[in-house]
Image (cartoon, rainbow, N blue to C red):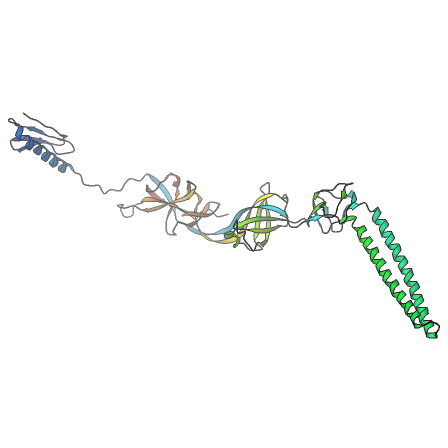
Length: 417
């Protein structure tokens, strides 16, 4: 007796015959097959196994199930909104440095003179013409007095020459002197006049050198640096003081070429102070050229009231460019993963009934703009008629099935600030 069994049993048993063998099988996921033959021999084993295979195929075909068309069950209930159009304030955030509008390097025009008085210190506010520094002027005083004496001598010589010339004119008319003598007297007068002019020029030069002994402020401003002390011997051309002209400061920032062309003179600038206070300014000038190595250009913004800002400070700032309409979504709809911004858009679910709230999620990478208040600007990657997941976006992945619930506010709540 030979028996063979395959464990695929389900339902009621059934019997079948094949070439003298009794085959018992039960159709279903598991079928139990028994083959009995009272008289088996070696040459009939092939036909016996063929019968077993045939019965197994019949059982498997009988147990096949039709595919289900029911949609998958939703994992989450999400709130969705449609993008809305709002007026968004445009600005460029950039870092820059605070600098003096004009910083003047002050020195003297004399060499070898000793400083006797330094009348100002760093931080002092000065007026135009105010004395800042005095040098030892004793030698210069002597030279000036000598020059004035030379002028007096020249004036006396000219007066004598004038009298001689007048007398010669009278004598030559009377025939008492020759014409050549009269011409010589006139020449002496012109020479005396020239000597007087030269003496006066020397006196003026001596007066000018004497004035150089006092360094005066060329304009209103603030002393920003001092490198001279009383008793120090100074030389011409060396920097002794620095003056921030009129006390004006400005904010300078390097802008990328794409942003540089968007900024015009007169645009409002908001600079953050050291205690996060906002200092307002106005763009004075924009560089007409771009650095070919960095592809950036310089912006200059006046700070009429710099407050706590000081020259040389580093400061963050924003350049306000006005407002323009933009497509925005709630701030919580944007999820950041791996350094990129994503939103989750709901799509219709295949196989769902009409009017069903079941949706399939599409994770989409977007480019964002301004993030202010409760909204985020979407620059690209979203169509106006699409709906975006608002609540629960952080728990979703691409392809998830959810149940959609519309937001009552439908994206209109909140405001951009």
